[in-house]
Amino acid sequence: MQLRPVIQLRRPFLALFLLSCSAFSAFAQEAPSPDASPVSNAPDTSQQEDRAATTLRVNVNLVSLYFTVRDKRGGLIPNLGKDDCNILEDKQPQKIKNFSAEADLPLTLGILLDTSGSQQNVLPMEQQTGSAFVKRILRSKDEAFLVSFDVQISLLQDFTSNPRSIEKAMDEAQINVGGGSGGVPGIGQGPVPVQGTPKGTLLYDAVDQVSTDKMRSETGRKALILLTDGEDQGSRDKITDAIAAAQKANTIIYVLLIADRGFYNSYSFGGIGYSGASLMKRMADETGGRMIDVGNNGKKMEAAFQQIEDELRTQYLASYTPTNNKLDGSYRKLDISCKGDGLKVQARKGYYAIPSPEDSGQ
View 1 (cartoon, rainbow, N blue to C red):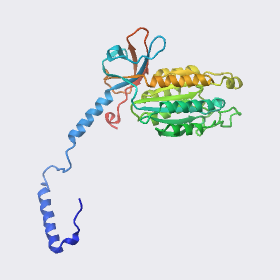
View 2: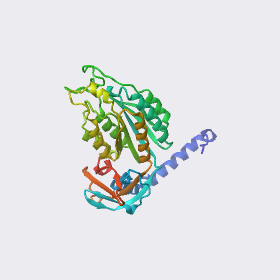
View 3: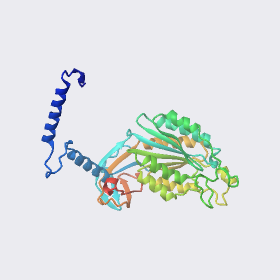
């Protein structure tokens, strides 16, 4: 709608006078009495706000779990129903509200690439096989990003639906050998020195930071894939911090354990040797994922990526309102079981009952 030009008024003074009178009359009609309560002319949105608040509270109190089920031979089970599975929270049975098999929900995928010196001989294999995996799994409605970690944590490619962007960033990743720690590859002083501790592979810090900064604000299916030997050197965070961050972000962690055993034969790290496998298995198990040991074998790595792809496309989503409705930040243990001969459920071991900013008054 266009306003008529003022130039069309033939009697500007009279028009201005009439306009002033009209405005005064409108003000007199709308102006409230000095003793009256303030009146707002804004549209009434209270009902909309009430509906939004109700929706928010329902979403906050609803716990959603993604999980996979395998038979005793390790095969994925794709056709279970709501009545086939049970959920316990802190050993208390919960009533499942929604249950569905999810293969096509959007997927948020983060790839964490270990570029410390210990990966020098296996990085080309990681780049080739990882790029092929992203090409296969990433669809137009999915998003992925790529992070490298060594003496520092670097975002090589932010969220994208284009697998070529991930492939390009992965191909450009380089080993960071650091420096200042006796010449051991990958061990050096990072941007935030830790007194008395060589800083070389910030694995736990990377998982914590990515889970908190990249994954926590995302919705739907979320997974991190770590390509690493599992050795952490110099992180401020502990493995428990990394696991907690992933759980709070409702993010599954898969670890492809890629260890060049020859490297550890040459550098024993004070006689400790290689010890990453058990810790990486713990991280994956606690978040509902898996650790797959591929060593430095390209065929095993291809098979591992295929297993992850199959699992992410054969997931169940179950949701329930917990009987313990306190949002007190406490950790709740979860146990999911499904009926059937030897069926094994792969799911996260628990969650944190964290209040939203609205519920906590922040």
